[in-house]
Image (cartoon, rainbow, N blue to C red; front, side, top):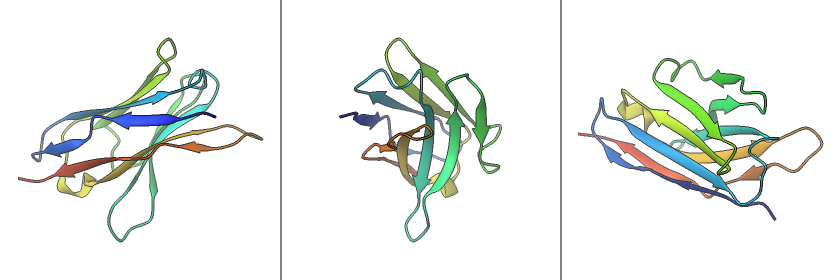
Length: 116
């Protein structure tokens, strides 16, 4: 059973930075499409960024230019570097792993709060 464990969330002031990490229990990072999603109170879960097994990335328009997704296949970890954070970035951030014809996996989520 694959597990995804997120870390790195917390409270940060507007304009600040955080780096989220998602570590997988198995060697799926190199073969799955890995992603970060977020869900704010009263809103639907939305895609933040994806990175494919080939290294291609995709970002939501609201975070493009501020967030960077990357992965380290050696330690089975995916990162989300978040810069220039805004109050509207406040949400629970979830790690996701998917691929065609295979089970989709989710982490338990990590809270990010942007507030002065």
